Image (cartoon, rainbow, N blue to C red; front, side, top):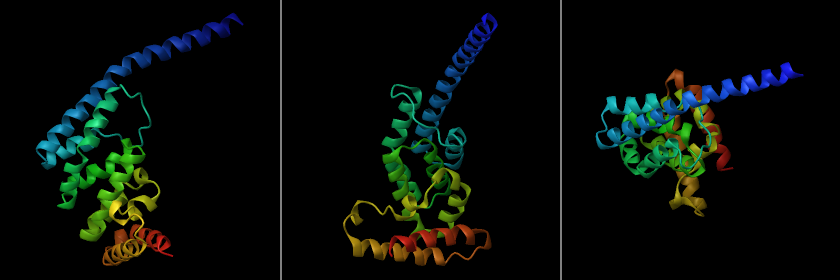
Amino acid sequence: MKNIIHSIFFIIIQVSIALSQTQPDSVQEWNKLGAAWQKFISNPIESNGLRVYSLLPNENYGIVEPDSAFHNTWESIYDNLYKLESLVQKQNRIAVKVSFKLYSISDADFTETLDQILGRLIRTNPKLFLEELKLHRELVGNLSGILGNLGEKFVDEEDLSKKEIIKRIQSLEKVKSKSLIGIRDECIIELKSQIQ
């Protein structure tokens, strides 16, 4: 019995040491992301965007303490999404990449905003939208939001919403690239289900 207790105690100590050693690196990484984000937003060149992209998690990060370095960085990013939106509307590929990768740190409101920003791209550049969606499909999850979250202008406007969804379907149908047919068809099926 003593051996088991000693073993458990030893494991707890080892885990505590490991966590205390990785914590500062995590704080440093989030601080690096925050600094890279500010640099990208103030000077949205490709190299700055790629730095942000490389520092964002590759999978959904989850919920963390509100006073953490993650939260401070997250808040800075969320507060400046309107600047990112402007770049996405200009069809800036690195801004689109960064927008998709931001799903890895988004909560419900953040996700809804990203859905609207990226969803508008369907009508202006459906090929770019599909290329990046295909690369980031795991982060997006359910397609209904990114395809059908049309924004406040469309709330309680059934006819207007239906027209917008039909225009999105028509835009997607113009994409003929063989490598995008699968994701394109998946999107079209989802959009059609939203107007039936």
